[in-house]
Image (tube, rainbow, N blue to C red):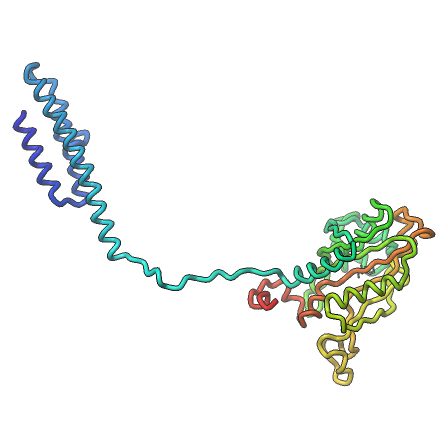
Length: 342
Ligand code: PHE
């Protein structure tokens, strides 16, 4: 028995001279596995004479511990050799330039919203947002818009059913604000609006507005004009000329469109019509007017005491005018080549 043990010891020493990790594992199974040689020696101890069993048992246990230790050490060493080899063959060239990650920036529309908000905050306006899904009442009826008005048509507005729609302007927030809050009111409402327009060079079914509403005692048309000029000079610089052109909205009286000097031709090419202003020399940017007395009444505000003005800035158009962008589709395409210019 003792002789067998010293044979096994010799065999293990031999096998571990300069082994591969697989050879070590094979040796472990051969010696210490369930049916391994050392394991079966240990199992066979019970069959020995009691006087022989003690010394053989001791020697076999000692061999098992020794073998386990030799194998563990050899494994660690073999791993180290492999790693050292990998380090010389699989090295990484850390001097290669990395891939630069571009830093994003604000979308041009977001930048213009930011500029507008900066102005209105400085003038003491509140900024609030409203729901995209509106009631027909807030979007049309309360705004004095009769059933016959073309904007109410199913071909112009996205209806969910008879009572709900996607707002086609930010003006319903005028009503929500006046229903909730008594004057003085001084607020702007940035947000998306939706219309059933085919996509082309001047229309997108989603676009961006910023509604403004001021209600107080003694508010008049001159206040409106002054604010319209402030907006234009804040965005386009002090030299930008605006004009208020008489217009019609059911919820304002009188109403006006705010035009600026054409940014493409500078108002000069009336002989050779310009693509942007069609030769008029002016570009329409947004609508405005004095809040209609009926709208004040609909919201429980006495038009004999209070008056006010409202405006609905076309943020896409303002942004196009500011940066000379000739097609609103660019705003929605998320083309980095376009976006990184602003
Ligand atoms: N809601 C109008 C539009 O979308 C713009 C507007 C707002 C006009 C406020 C007057 C007053 O065309």
